[in-house]
Length: 432
Ligand code: AMP
Ligand code: MG
Image 1 (cartoon, rainbow, N blue to C red):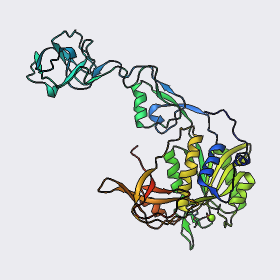
Image 2 (image 1 turned 90 degrees about the vertical axis):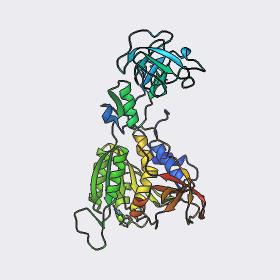
Image 3 (image 1 turned 45 degrees about the vertical axis):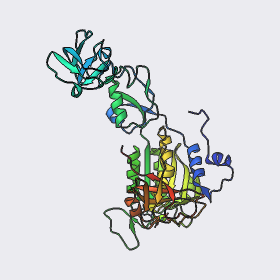
Image 4 (image 1 turned 90 degrees about the horizontal axis):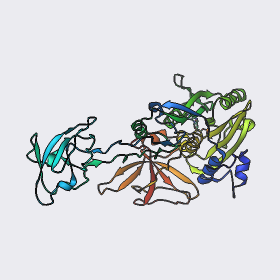
């Protein structure tokens, strides 16, 4: 972590940037400005490990014990002394007893002897090898034959501390905890962990044409879908959400909404009203209540965006004024707001892997802007990853996003793509 003090104003951040042009801002520069202006929250709470799923770990977790605590068997079979094994002929061993998981064999295993052992059972002191049951021959209750060449000394033994040794760091601060991490914590005997408090994000839609669900769809109106995609994306990110509904396009309603959001949330996300042609009061109110930059970003979809901070009654919240078009909202959320919110949450930002795929069709692309086309990736019969575009790529066509399983990311300088060319894709869903 750096100890540089947070910048006081957006102006301070952009003044350090060469060639800053709010009317033609490359994606990378906008991302850089946002990352520099954002500061993480620093409030920690302790939660039971089940509740820690999806939360950001606030402190390193050091293992207090060896996991496993003893050498134990990785198989059901017979524990023996590796030095007893003959290289070229069957070895017959006397069975001294049995070790079960959770019930060790108390005696001593001498040369020429073995014990029957179950997976997870503690290895007797003198044994270093386990022969799986299915490799043995002529097993009775008193003796067993071990054919030559089936195991070598040390096989099928899990070593004390091989998962985690006592004193080793098991999980690093900033990690977003996944099911495996929660299980790992349990394996260490840890019942509660410190996590960052949840980020509180308020959001609302602006636009007189918007109708909420349950309302009549008057002529020229559309249902407000952005609040639902935002709700979904913020929930997936693990935020506490404050859905403020559709705000009417009048100065008093907008001012009240922005003030309430700034006083009660860490971040505010709005959609609509930030484009050049916008004839509403959204931009005006953002400028009046905060330190906000209005950008035209070199990207498609999602060109207009506002970013900054809104102040009210001595409190403040970061503002992401996203465009109104439904696909543009999602793209700007994923490529700007997501990392910023993760940074605020104190999370180590996971690198999103761009993977190469063959484009099945020619794509029109103008250099000088980053494009995020919606794609369907699949594996060709030759095993190669390929991608098709989900039909029309208009920024209002939310179906293109719903049908997609990936984004085709065409970089700033890239020109037209021919069918068969390689492009980079970002898969939308993973296993976890
Ligand atoms: P704007 O950025 O406000 O000019 O809006 C651009 C387009 O997005 C217009 O066609 C709006 O009707 C549409 N739009 C804005 N907000 C929403 C919303 N919350 N849900 C669905 N469409 C919206
Ligand atoms: Mg509008």
